Image (cartoon, rainbow, N blue to C red):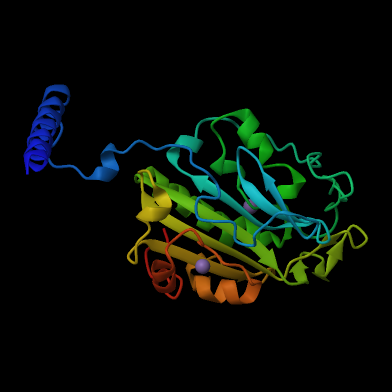
Length: 290
Ligand code: MN
Ligand code: MN
């Protein structure tokens, strides 16, 4: 009883002190504001929501963790299986696009290291998983997105229209006070680029994916992120064909996380409680798309 009284007194005192300090420091601010305004954006772990494929040291499921993103790399495909990254306004600054596509020498020497020229003349873009424009705080961060381990053969209109629109939309969400966990991946074999259908590039060392997907978890800026995901958290899941004949409207390709899990065999958002996963992974997003 005594402890309860002390706790109440302390809560009252702290609350009073906090409201006083807001008035003192920001006399011209509106008195009512949401927590999204006040929480500071931070840089958080890229695997906060989980490791979808249990990536480890396997050649087909190799965990590659960088300061800028984490991935499962598949040396047999010459592409990532998936790339996962945290996005908040804390990752964005004014570093210019580096455009320094290059082999990733951090891959084991037994792997074929895809070269920047391996896509030349293929009819496919060097499509980023973690986009250049999501990593502009430093030139080092931006440059890391041009490692060929972060790249897939992506049909031009898919990359430059559908995907670019979705990437831009994600950055409008962080400008509005949110932080995002984004997982992008690809699977299957065979896509249609500007030179027509192809299954591989570079004499078979690179597989052209058939489908390209993304899952985005949207949270107001804050901490303890995996446990803040609830049944009402917005989760956007998109799965697109890797072809030139694709709509530029990414909302057309919305699906469920469950469908992507069924197609890939992964467990996405595995650090979220099972009961919350079962709700949010079965829902198709119907929110705004721009
Ligand atoms: Mn792109
Ligand atoms: Mn899941």
